[in-house]
Image (cartoon, rainbow, N blue to C red; front, side, top):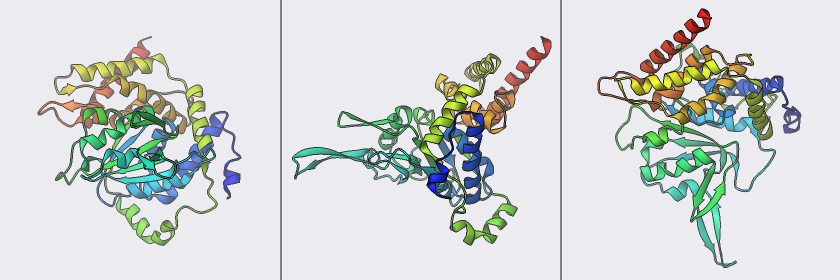
Length: 337
């Protein structure tokens, strides 16, 4: 199908938003084998305006996932210097300007000119982000929080569709710089990837030639405008009851008062989770958020934000335990009414 046919969809209600999700999901699953759950979480992040940190094994498909997502998008509102996908390989000798861009002197014009860095893209694959210095890591903070970069005291805006997919390797610790809590807090999700199942791996080997060619040409793409309209439709059309918000606050309080946890979750994390809950509800065919959405997203949204005390246990298990208690308490209160 042509890009013109893909662009015909007008996203004005939840059915249009569901069509956008279906197109993205179909193309991602056609290009990434055995990662349906990961693909859906990345879609939640894309449609809720969040960023994703993938903790993965080498050769687990992170680059394929990012490339497939970038290939799903049609830029129907082109901007100078902004493309669909950029990959930044983070290394110890990388400089902040290598990420954000630099100001250079144009001898012919006699003026200084800004040359955008690879961060000026809709989807940025920040590969092995923990292999570079904290100084370079901090170059991403402003971009991820405010969708802008400041170079030589001049601020340059990024696109509204800006999404960072960052990766780090949990096995190789030599020569790495652990991400500080302020950096981790900018990521909506941290997703721990494991090896795909044996059946999916066999399917990959069987269809490798077809998969290398990418998704079939007849699969519809989505435009930048359709993605942004989908965000707005979901925000307006999917309800979040006050009981869900109270449960989120109760969970946050429990993380701050638990002796196993040195640092609980931030208020920012709760704010970032709200649209993600709405997106997940819509992807499940609902126009309202339910406790199951909280239970499903909580480990990915909060596990990386907890600083555990020595002997405190695994952050993901503690997150599931505390959120489970909160949801159970919410259920009991609703039955008692």
